[in-house]
Image (cartoon, rainbow, N blue to C red):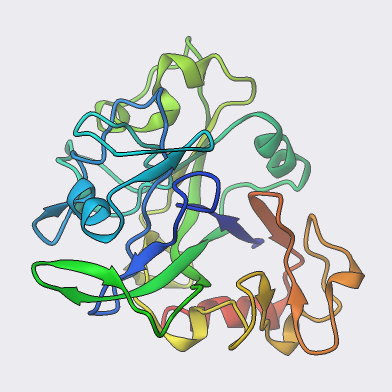
Length: 275
């Protein structure tokens, strides 16, 4: 089994601000804007509120192609990975999905990512506090952190182009659109029904905030990670041995998926996230 750290959700260029850590510890990853998608921020819901309401409560605007704009009910987004059943109305048989294409998918192919491997999705998150009926960023958490918020163990790998027939329950995924089917290497990773080492747990889902899924070293910039000792000396795609500094690991600014050389100790670290 390979471990893949996958960067997703709002960042400084797409969206423009961190995804919120809700007051109850929920890590609510906000998907980046995507003009080709048929899903809008208004369509997505959590806790009785739309993602559009959450965005407007916290910031009121988002960054799209280096330009700030006020999101509208029809402002579309790239819901990928798609890990929570209650985010949208679902067809029977729905399960977690993650799509990739182009150069990023070639990287996964070159790293031989396949059935049984485990994606751990991380993003830029910042704590929020209640303000009236809405939310605001917690002034005590000025910059936010990289945090692992979700997972998907691969049960199937689908190459999706215009000749591919997909089940009805996949129809809303952004990598099924006409535009994405035109993209070379367009691929959808379908989740396992359950984890290979724990049949009682779903093969996809999300985490709440806990110490063990915070990547950023306390008191440092979000890209400075506090990886456990078992990672030392292991290869991680897009990184070099020089990424290891005296007291932290310097993650790169570019790259979506980082494939980790995995042994028993790294795998045990990943399994501990589920406790």
